[in-house]
Image 1 (cartoon, rainbow, N blue to C red):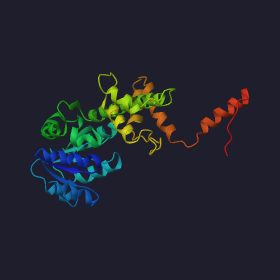
Image 2 (tube, rainbow, N blue to C red):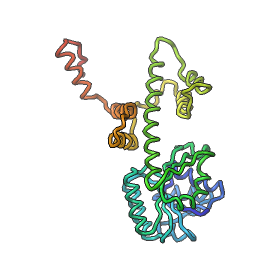
Image 3 (tube, one colour):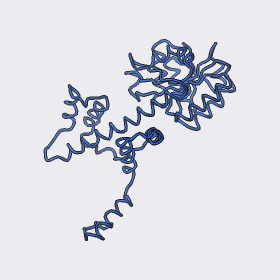
Image 4 (tube, rainbow, N blue to C red):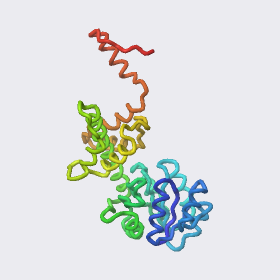
Length: 299
């Protein structure tokens, strides 16, 4: 199948390579040239602009966006909507906010252009293992692009979730769950590391990968990280969030669903970025005021 790909970052470039290996014809575009040249070296057809990219597509055109959420998505949609024809398809494979996806889908539908949202999970390992795909949008358009989804996903890894926005909504919840799972692993390994025993956390994590109820791909990645750096001395405990956890919590609030673990894990990420928390200083000061408890003075 012929498809255009815009955005050749860590995931986009690998997705293009996986499609090429499965016999698809891929036309690519990226804001910077080296990524285009790398994709071309692997069999893709390069383009110089959105206009050039669309002109190289034949018949019913399919364009996959793999760009950051927000403004980059809107800018590409704006450019493409003037170039595409009725019944053509735009796929947003990034982590867009599902409400914005629904609105984009509504506007494009008025132009006769199909808009598919595709939550994509698999990270840098997707080239080898495949990507878990969660799609939303017009079912006929989704089924038309199914050969592409089939090539990208491993067996059983593709799910059609419903109408416009459903795919991004499901991916948002997926990432919220991921926050909680990662936090549980992090806390557990810290307790092991600070125990009165000399516990080899890499060996423990490796053992848990065989027959344990907590075995998972995340745990496998923890084993790999501990093997490379047993005490994780080469990195700082600074953890960013890309938005999906926040959106999951907003959805929980709107739907009156208690989400203690996911909410706590997001706040812990905030805490990881504080060099010297004012809140912790307030706690220390209050303990000193009411109980005379010792405070550690800043040098």
